[in-house]
Image 1 (cartoon, one colour):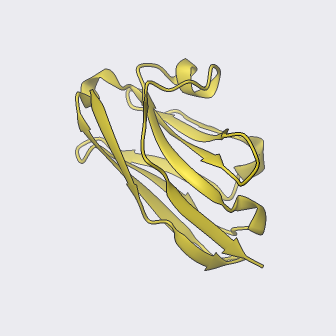
Image 2 (cartoon, helix red, strand yellow):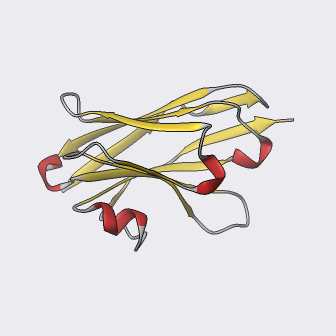
Length: 124
């Protein structure tokens, strides 16, 4: 099993920045891919970004390209999401996710593991 714990959410004004963190523990060697999803009120959960441990390749949803940056520190088993130029439409609960392959996160969008989520609210 893999446990994922997010932190760093909060309230920020439009145009501001936040950095989310996700600490992974357990059998992390089974998870070559990690990523972020988000779910806004009344909407379905959507893919935001992903990164592959082995290659460092990154993947983004079109709506966040150029504003959000995903990274990971493999030594610390920690995933990050740097969010800049935030917009009110970025308001959502952000979930950390992990899977054995990038395909599972980016294409199939059914990660093996989920965190509990952290709230991000962007005021206008």
